[in-house]
Picture: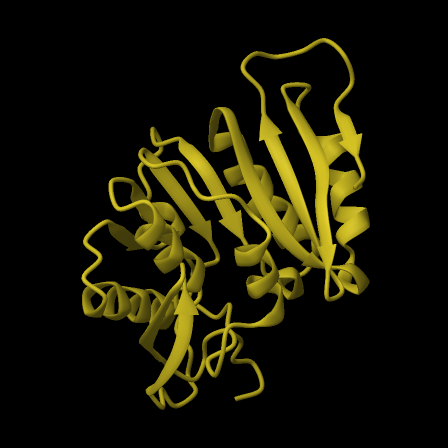
Length: 215
């Protein structure tokens, strides 16, 4: 249907379950995907850049995949950090069901696939990893990031991958101007037309202006 997007809460398009082989956290695995979710036939280029251009996650604590889709980032975090709790958050209920299926099939019992409002308000995150849904529109995207980035633990990082021609540089500037002085924004890398942005929450608020660092 024309109004059916991967960021629809309940996709109306046919489910069309399929099995694909992908490489996650150094493992060749088979996962289930479906129509009506983002990039159902493969790991998209942006997510590949993010997975290949970020450090291993913290070994414990609460980790967040924001806009998880069928789960490549969340599943990778769960494999790499088996003692952490991974929150896979999306508005798309079909995507969340796929994450649950895939986590169970891979023997990962540390993944919580949840709607945004179902994540307890008192949880903070040791890392946030996201290929954010740029196509939802600027206002929705900004609201999403304003909601979740401040939930980073102190001395923790969010890593965002954004296509350069879809506004990565303007998003970097917006983050720097919007977040408090306890954060810094850094362009960590550029690859295949994508920027990886690192947003760090520092140990305590600082009086100087927020940093914008370009690789």
